[in-house]
Length: 288
Image (cartoon, rainbow, N blue to C red; front, side, top):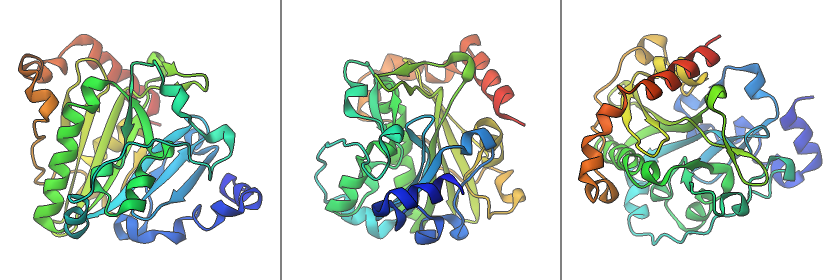
């Protein structure tokens, strides 16, 4: 019996949510993202929320991916919502799969949303976005800077097209493995966000270095898949994922605008040896 099946036997509250068939509307063509590594798939369970789903991992005590169907209609509601930061463990999971707020205390890392609270329409959906099953450690410089710009760009894309499918997640470099907290929450080397635009019939992805001097790049979903060993849109044809669609540029966040000197250095970061080494190591370790 698989992990999801075992959990459903032990945790009845989870059974209604921990199965792909319960929330196909959140995925492109109704098919959830595919974790291509058998090792990474071990000890995982999918959780469906009102407006997004996550693949929670026992190895990372966090999400491998977080998926949403982002619509202009929901964003109009979300724009009227007042954010209330209330991060909580996801008690649908057994304790061995949970992260806790104490893991982030004095860690010097932000609790970085994968599906952002700014996308969520309604009080309950907002509350669900703060579950730690949707959170990974991000540097403050990334979370409050370029990552906020990526989130803003994607919301602008949804407003323009009416509906897009978004999958977000972390990527890890085993050669630079760092953890935080008593439960050893791993710190991602990169975080990424992939988008499928049904109206424009195109895809694309943003990939950001999770460092004190972060930068982000736009790339194809095919390259992203090789980088992190997760296919965000397995139901789409390979030809569509090989090309970068008409993606909006990453917007300046208020945090980045306040630090113009750092902002001007973002693209240079990708040329640095340390950044290139980390990415090469990540690709080498994850590509089968």
